[in-house]
Every structure is written in C-alpha cells, then in structure tokens.
Image (cartoon, rainbow over all chains, first blue to last red; front, side, top):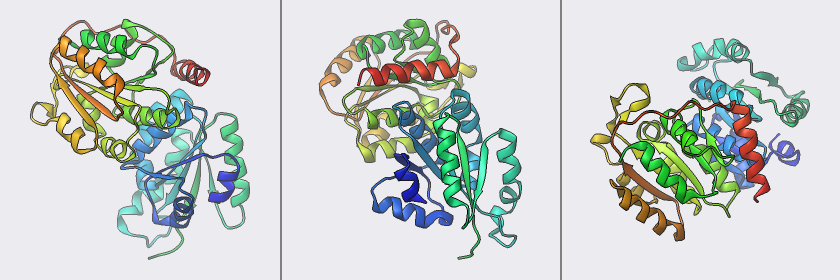
Length: 154
Length: 186
C-alpha cells in the first residue's frame, strides 16, 4: 500500500505511529519517506505547509489521534480546503481491544461522518481501489481518509 | 513596544519572504500592517503556525520562511520546537511575540511570565535571540539575515493597542494566493 501511494504521487508521509499500520510505516522508514511528529495536529500542520508547495501529503495516526485532531481537520484542512489523505488506524474495532479504545472505536464511523470527511475502510481485497479512490479525491482537492481496522491483538 | 509596532518592524525585515502568522490578533495586525499574497493568515487551529511554516520551509529551501507566532500559540505546540530542532531547517525564522498573555481572548495570563521560551528553543537546536526593544529587534533581524537557522527571536512586548481589523479574505483565497505566489517565485 505504501509503495502504491508513493508511485501514485504521494510525496510526504507524516504522522504519529500506530501499531495497526506498523508495516506501512516500516516500509516508509526504509525508503526514508516518513516524518514522525509529536502530535497528530502537528503532522497535519506540516502536511498543510507542504501542500502549499503543491505537494501531496498523507498524515497517518491512530483513531485516538483522530479524535485529538477534529478541530484541526475542521478549522484548517476543511476550512482552507487542503487536499490531505488521512490514514487512520481503527483501534476498538474488535470488541475485546484494550479498554481505552472502546469508546472512540465505537463512535469512530459516526465521528468521521459528522465532520463530513469522506472515508473508506481498507480491506485485504479492496486496498488498491481505496488508494486509487484517495488519489482521485486529492486530484480534485478534496481531503479524505482511509481507515485500517485493527484485527489482531498483541 | 506593543505587538503592532513589533509586527511592523518584523514585516519590513521579512520583505517579500513568506510569512505564516498565528491566529488571533497577530494575523489581524499583520493584515492591517500590510496585506500581501505572501502572508498566510491563520484563522483558528491555534498553535500550528510553526508546523505549517516547517512544511513550507522544508519544501522551499532557497526561501527564508518567517513564522509570526505568539506565546500562547507556541505553548500549545511545544512539540513543534523539537521536530524543527531535529530537522534543523536553515531557512526558518521563528518570531515569538510574547506578551505573556492571551490578549485576543481578554488578556488572561500565559505561562511565559515564568517560563523562558528562549531557553527552550536553545535546547531544541535553535539559534536563539531575545529582545525587549525596537532597536534591539531591528539589530537582531538584520544580523539573522545572514545566518543559518532555525532561528528563534523572542520578542517581549507589552499588552495594548487597538487590535487590527478582521481579515477580509476567505480561507481558501488566503491559501490559493499564497500558494500561487510561492510556486511562482520558486
């Protein structure tokens, strides 16, 4: 998935790591394309700055970080119309995930819908289409999110 | 020195360089001082001006990129100093207009009365400067024109003065004209 997005013109991958996407991040680190920030909102700010230079950026985070970022998504990304792809790890998707993820995990699909951020849930079979869909959104200057479900336990 | 006076001096030094200005009175004062396409005014998303400027600076290494930040703003995104300090963009000039308060929301105190941003920036690999006067600010601005960043200029200012007028451009317009100018000048 990382390689496909890179090939399709995503130039910057910025964010806060999440175990759900550790392989994605490892691949990016191998290619020296990953910038790790202290908070998700900081990553969104940097991506916005890069987008001012006409560069396509992806911001990755866990859904706990997505909840942190709602105000930044609405008052920066959506208000100024910054085309940014969000890759969000969905903790709390499994009922028996760690307790801190229960609540946000349960309301996550509603939260994304409420703020009007277009999203698709990535699976084993649709990931290529999802990447194409996201690139198409960005080419039309619309921000969007790809959701990765956490379907395993540590 | 009050904020508007400091912003005028800083604006003159920045010339045609891109400026990312923090939300609240800082952007409003900059807008009133001189509205230019190279100004990126933030409305909302408090704290993120230095992050946006970092993104611009990394992708435009030949341009000096200025951040007009506030004390309340940088305190909200202190992590940004560590990311900037790690990446060390030579072309980033980070100005903090420090009135030790949240003046835009009614003058409530911030923590910078007791905490020195200058020292924090220094320990984050910034070249740090500090001033309380107009003459001092002018001197530092001209000195830092020839040194590699990241540069932090902490400007201790007094509260007061009439706030600048509200920004009349829509956020997508602010973005579009800034981006067009930035990419034209490349």
